[in-house]
Each structure stands twice: as C-alpha cells, then as structure tokens.
Image (cartoon, rainbow, N blue to C red):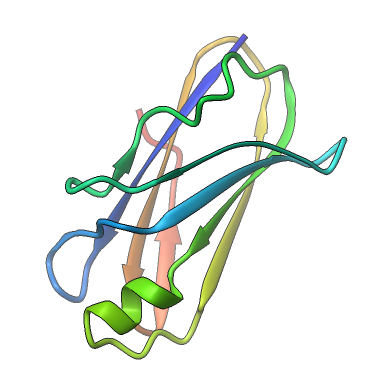
Amino acid sequence: MSTISTHVLDTALGHPAPGIPVHLHQLTSAALVGSGTTDADGRVTDFACGQLEPGNYQLRFDVAEYGAATGQELFFPEISVTFTITDERHYHVPLLLSPFAFSTYRGS
C-alpha cells in the first residue's frame, strides 16, 4: 500500500502557499478518497485516506481563493494533476504555482 503528500510553492511570491484546498480522487472508481488544506508551509501530509492501492489518481488544487487572497489574478482557478501509483512507497507530488503557469514533478 502507498501514501501520498503534496507541497505547493508560490514561485511568483517566493514562499509556500497556505490555505489551498486539495482533493484526492481515485479515477477508476471516480471516488474522492481524501482531502486536505495546505498548511502554513504549503503542505498536505495526511489526506486521511489511509493506504492507497495501485491505480490512477488525481490531485485537484482549488487555487482561485488563494490567488484572490494574495492579490494575484491566476489564469488557472483549479489545477488537476493525474498520476499513477504502481508500487508500495510514499508518493510526493509538489506543485509550483505562478499567475500564468504551473509545474509539477514526482518528488521524494
């Protein structure tokens, strides 16, 4: 079984992005399996979903309110990152956020 965490960094302002709701969906069953809100360090370390089976998942970051709160007009009000869990390990999916772009990668 696997676990997951995420970290959102605001590259335009140069600091972590707190207060962003993040939802974890298992795509095969289209089920919401966990959710959380980024903490003061921009992290969600516990989606309260326990261990995850192999399969396709999606993290949905609702960034619109964060943009408004920081005075940024974000082009993407919601960002979805789809990925595959293949084996038993911890998966870390960071998100680098700016007003007109985003980037992600498989972290460690």
